[in-house]
Image (cartoon, rainbow, N blue to C red; front, side, top):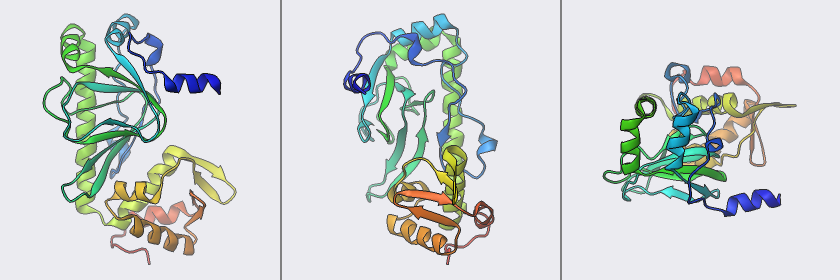
Length: 266
């Protein structure tokens, strides 16, 4: 416990050792999409590089450790490169002039955030915040431009990563524009089960902490609507809520619900 506390209170400013971001096949993301399988998995930025190439790139990075709820970058702030996620989870979201908020995606280790600009030009188009204690590696834009020219594999990784994000945000726009809120909630609950589901005596527990506000920001609804909808689903025996936990009891019903249309679960 003491070692963990020390790790969370230190902010590295020197070169980042290669162990910080190892090759991993567990990179994943959480976003609202019609069919995640069609998008494929998000590519890990450094996965296809040699050990020497990763060492060179990470030697230009600066590690930062964020507590849950701490802001990584703000919408409208000056852009200065990208952030490679080592551990934890980063939520990227947009806030409209009206104050309404929509979550674009949750990004996990191996992914980078801070785009679509990557070379330190302009301002951030949205915001990023840690939703769990996280460690990230900041690669400044000017240095990243030089590295991309010197390491072709890195340039390809950036292109592939940006292409994947483009598909993700296009899929999100399609869902928001063509699916009812009820369908979007069903899609989201099923996706959460696939990512975080564990067996429970009452069904499948979503073993990750998401508030009703978190769910609302992902499906483009209000917190009150999500609360009422989950209550209706519980009354029908489709889900079960236990304190802050959500248990999926009838996955088959959610599979049907996500394509039935309409904006009500009554």
